[in-house]
Length: 474
Image 1 (spheres, rainbow, N blue to C red):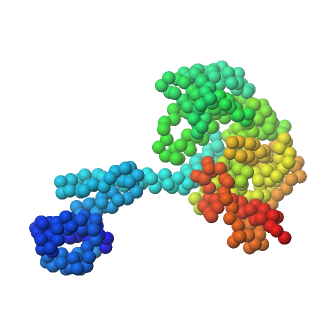
Image 2 (cartoon, rainbow, N blue to C red; image 1 turned 90 degrees about the vertical axis):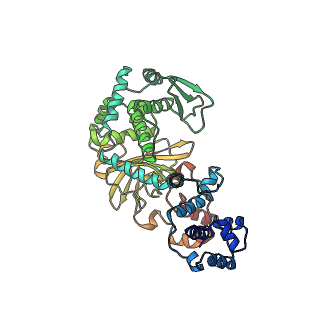
Image 3 (cartoon, rainbow, N blue to C red; image 1 turned 60 degrees about the horizontal axis):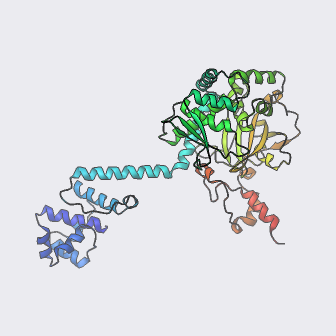
């Protein structure tokens, strides 16, 4: 037993017998202060002293060391003493204090309850990777159920565009400013916007701050509309990661619906389907948006308005999947929770192959045979502050007749359900290098919250081993 429990056991036996601390100290020929230190668990008694104390209390060492539970008060005091010596109290800068008899039992219970809640919240934050995966899985199921189409957000976008008399077609920067004015905001571009933010809304004064240092890849409309979308939807401070993620999805969806209005985009896409010439590039160019925005918006409208199940992938150059959507039965790699985000994309998929294509001006198309059927994908590589990402949209083989690029000769075979296909390096390379290599992860920090578990999360070991094999001295 630890000194704290031994001390409380001695105190309990002493008080049960009606002895004062001074009387017990006199009986064992020790100073009261010394016994006080023992009872408070600050000093561990030697065996000879413990025997003397047991005799003075008319008890035995076995009684002092027995495993029977203490009374409620003693149990609470021990728990609080341990809590005060723990990391939570130390991190809060609360010094340990003496728990006197005058401290009410209910006060001890309250302090322990608060300490427990603080530790629960800390553990919850520490479990963010798993929470992120669970939230992503739940949200992806919702998106699949609704075919990634949110009618209420489409209606909200239509209401806002009607309010500013948007005639259709590309949404200009001026129209974005008109939407801000309609919502009671003025736009202010500043050079010192906090680095971790895209915009800051001063709700009290109706001011929306944006960075005046936009990169060449930045779309000034997107930053404005994303900030305004949160205000349009009445978002409150999220209380969980799941709520935060849902708000981000809603914000991005509404932004896309404003940039590519449903009423104008659907006839455009229906005409393209009629001509068997659906193209994400054409949608991008028609509305002057990024390829990712066009690809994501296509997934919103494809199933509901065109009858086409689709999948969408955003893959970092490291091979890590960062965004995903599918309702076409494509079989992506998942972890034990069912999460796809954070998994390594198969090296044979279009989303990985496109990184090795020299021509980044034209779209890359590929058919990929999988254990779940053949899929066709179109993909592009886009640059960001976090490195290159591939954006790909794909459909089942039978639906490729509606798309430009269906005549591509590019073929691939993916067996990512087989371990050696993409999750492990070839046996000969692994045997040669597994015990002789130590990669230092370069994956962007923003991906760490959703990375799969493993020795080197986010590292493509095949790339590492191939590199070592090629550069090894002969």
